[in-house]
Length: 305
Length: 228
Ligand SMILES: Nc1ncnc2c1ncn2[C@@H]1O[C@H](COP(=O)(O)OP(=O)(O)OP(=O)(O)O)[C@@H](O)[C@H]1O
Ligand SMILES: [Mg+2]
Image: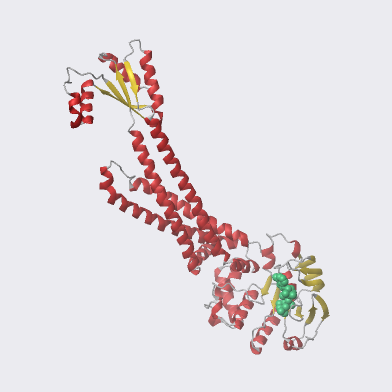
């Protein structure tokens, strides 16, 4: 193909966007509407995911030591636990600290329960709190810690707790929520593709006669296809740019407006920067692809003249 | 050279448009196709530029077996056949200029030459002043002349003209006939379907008469032979 022909196709594709004004409008609108709905759900899914991550990351393993475990043993255990590959962080909580924490978490209402206990009369054992890299591995890590304790002749670990049962239920819920989000987003993406390509198909159906004339004048299939390809890509880009702008603008407003209320509930929305990248990438890629796909596929049908 | 050998054409709805037509048209001939409405003239022509394919029989144009052409080759064969469609078939969203230039863009002619040649044929059909109009802004006769301009712009070796003067006043009709005759003098084969008795009987050429899908008469320097 000559350079001048390439330029001709480009020019023609751009001109067609203008020439077929109403059809362009219809196609772009259908892209904006479908992708916007998809984008809203994508943002929702991202946040649900993020929330699930936040909740999951709060689960910890608590390792209680036998009363009177010597300091050397404590350090040895701390190192051994820290060396487990799944473990991210081990923090030693002395029994004094443990009592203080307990007081704070019970609060003023239950303060009489702990009356009489102090640093010299402390029933609590020393302990570790252990964070893991992937909360889903918590049970596995707990088992390993338990094994370290059993392997030691002095049996320095009295118990390993991580909310067994509760944690598993929590993960079942968060995983289900994640999967539902994924299914909804994929389902919407497929629906959007069909909706958009249908609109494009209809606009091209109206041009079936034109395609037929071009062929009778001696145009090859490629010659006819290229401007349609460019037109489709332009429509896709226009639609997805508009959608991206709407979504990002809307989301940044939402993040700002809800900052205070959600902050009180300890919920943090995914930042505009983090969500924006995913959302723009998905919308732009999907919109452009659909534009090209819809137009080339529909043209092909009418080229057999 | 155009050759039809025992051509039959039955449309999908069962209409027998052509029944056993055999014809040989030499290079550089000028042929009128005459016959009553529905006789099969347009079908005859559509087979030549392969808008339709024969149900039975062989047809060759410039040495190509039209019925058996590979889809990839069809555009290249069509480029040597200028078609003036009975219903014009202009691209509705392109201007007069763009419609004609399109036929030259297809063969990847340089832009400068496209411009020069397109304005030249617009002048020939008397539509220079209308180059920026859209087809829908033109009268039937003007649209027909755009179709003529597009058909001749690439200097094809064959021109197939389906009632090219059907919508023109006598004076413009004669202008177009002079144009076609001149193109024919320069070596182009012309096949023209017409109901214009005066033209056929004045500008004497070979006349092929079709009735009910068969050739009933074929005379060099023939007459129209029907009452309008
Ligand atoms: N696409 C089609 N499908 C079905 N029948 C058709 C089709 N095209 C033409 N016909 C029929 O084939 C016959 C021949 O039609 P054709 O158009 O060749 O006639 P014509 O001689 O060109 O007539 P006119 O002088 O009115 O243009 C007619 O009976 C017509 O109805
Ligand atoms: Mg006809």
